[in-house]
Length: 269
Image (cartoon, rainbow, N blue to C red; front, side, top):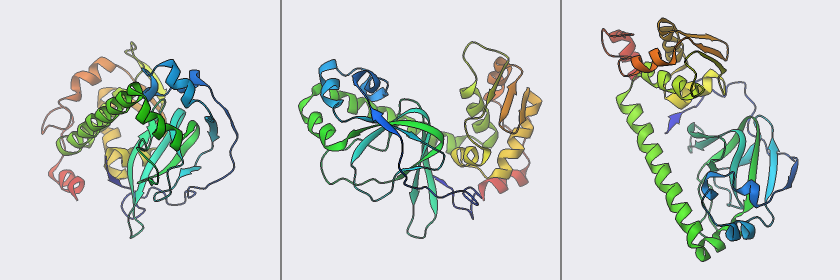
């Protein structure tokens, strides 16, 4: 998903700290912690043992820069806990949010060989823990391990499917539907009435959903009619079942939460 997050377009980043490269606490990791990364869920133990040499776990603070767009790929990184955002900067300096990675997900792309560069920058959103393994070791074992090669192919296929879903949502759903889907994805499984905290601030949510901040505020207001209450980052859903039932109808003219022509023109602008 590619969303313009420049201050002029979104207001996100205004007054925020720029990503910084700092010294971070780190410790060694073993095969068991590698297994927490989704990419390695089905990789054999022998390959994981060879991969685990020189693997480190780093603790990040909000705004810490993991790597910068255009820099050489020295490590392959995974989120163990927390969130990391991926951004791309145009020659004009405008930033675009590419995606947000969470528990178990790979940050960036798997290196296939030497001298590769990062196509995006990665920055922590709040406190996070990441697992890093040397890129040369990974690229070498990728050529030697059929299981690792198959894992990368599965991960690539899943990434493409996710991107297709995000593009479909951006093209076929309005802000109300995207927000409802996002809220439903955060509801604890098996609970019909629930409370939870948004994983990051609403400016970043707006960027992730591809809408302006004022549009997101209107979408949150409309969801109140369907039992969704918010106070800063705290959310209460009166009935997950009701919200899910309404999801497909949200945003249709005259049904559930209708939108005016002026709002549609504003969102399209």
